[in-house]
Image (cartoon, rainbow, N blue to C red; front, side, top):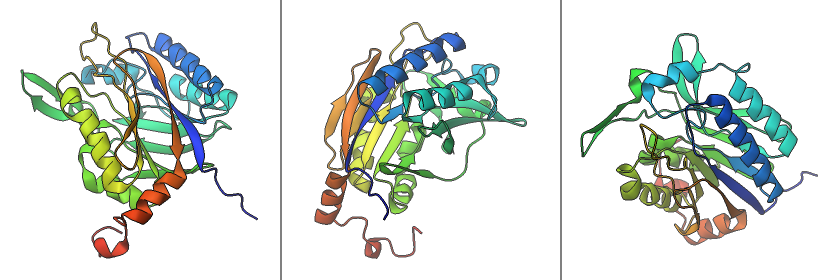
Length: 277
């Protein structure tokens, strides 16, 4: 007889301060993953671009390929040693001549079980003269990502992906009860939209959203907002970090997801017709 996944489990976000030294970033991430596991986390999430400064022109010098990259080997090894599902934030991934903003997920045995390449690249011109072009060095990925765990089905998106509702609807329609979002929002978009979008995607799709941000580092060329958070399918912020480096823990209750979906049947097929398959 198949064993039913546990109804509740603990997720941890490692809100890390990222600097220019890749090996220091990796060592810090490894330390935080083990600390999170000791605190009871079964799923651990790292921030977007946790290996390097969030500067498009620098991505090529930090990029690595699967499976031999230094960061990827650390993630696999640490997931196995800590006995956790590990969502490795994101790194610059190299495949041939192309670079991607990619997230790799490892199971408690250290096996790669999912990879998501950021689909919607961060190309913006914001108030105050701030501009950013991920497309200057990166190639967009294709399609949404969901993966199976001992704790149910999880969706995965990266930062700017969260601004596209249909992208999240597709993950929910394919069974996701939790959607993890490593994201490095900045001091313009963060205060305005970070919580808003995490709550909107949670209530739209009746899922938990897990937003994993880097800690704020005023010395960086790109200053991240921080404020990682976990939001319930009822759009409640159940855990919230400040801007500083920390480990944020939250309980995910899959039965609560089912209860919310039974009360408001937003995912019923009749509402979607042939649009989303």
